[in-house]
Image (cartoon, rainbow, N blue to C red; front, side, top):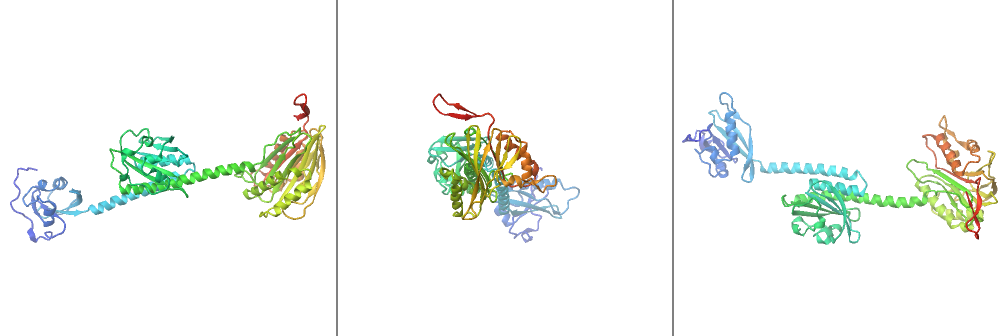
Length: 555
């Protein structure tokens, strides 16, 4: 544009009577060379220096003048009337959209529409959409793991990446020990435990107690203690936010957000958004902590319910093996125990039982029976009395389940293992003789926990070296499988399998039986399976501990 050219001396527009003269929108009319032809009252208010005859570029923002130039340059051929592409920019602290309209004589009428509120609303909507998407993604990431440490790492990393320059997760203190999880500008997550007073940072003690957060504008950045800063955070702290991590019934910790002095301080909207994020992170961390506590409790209780590992006691081999009904279960309704005698001359008590049902509910009654038998050990020599007291305990409990048991008092004398075997509604154990013959112990009795009056018959069994007495639950004999998938394993098939175990150690006998039963059911369902073998070893002898005390049987 030739700026030395004189602007038009008088307007070519329609003058004050033009339809846009009293329009509420600012309107500026300019000729093709960029001279102001006319403007209305709203335009003179918006552009105080704009007068008719001035150059457009001298009285309006550059973005309008540039749009006018582009509009003139890009008009091909003869000038044509009609609207052109709008332009957008700022005038002071407001934003406007300028819409051009060409007139028949080549002038351009610029209509300016204030779109500040609309654009602010669009920006706010876009921000909310981004925040909603972030919270949804954060929730998925946080809930993908029930590991407490993993949740803290994800929380710190997301907060440092999207909310601040650095983030610190403060777990509930253990005395003066404060567990911290840092994530700095480099994105690296570090766990550390410090011994400092959490009250040094304003609002941190309250946040750990679950109280409402202290606004960032009330926190002096210079009061942020050094132990709160991640290693990679080297610049001065410009702004800090401390907010609680709400948990289930009690706070899961606190979240500290840090920004350097180079960035703008946290706004009220950002603090509210940080609390929304903290609520999700706190819920995830609290759930992970509760899961860890429940898992620890379950592990402790499960340890007491799991069948014990058996070994040789007083010259007698004991071996047991248990297979729960479900692939995800560890305990069920089948159980066994061996309570060793105090010395070689006192009987050891063997108990194997089967509680009605399976799973955790059956395991609870299993634990009660095992504990009750443990308490009744001083009466172990009298099987009938022990079973009667156990039956009374079960009948007086709130449980509606019953159980079958087989028990034996075992002692070794002169190389022969003597057993007193009593069944309480349980399948009688099978005896494998040295020549491979298999026979049933002649015992029977009433199951416990179902009737007030019970009875039982005790059988006496002797095992020569290499012979075994096998106790088993009906999960073995009633296992369905085979070629057609529905045939019972049965007692006869079990006896045939045991005939092949003559002379085998107790551990080998239970492994062989469980292996055959597992092969029989294949991938089909089955009940709990428990086996316990009592074997008279081939080569056990008395050895003196020293020259004066009694000898002990060794394998």
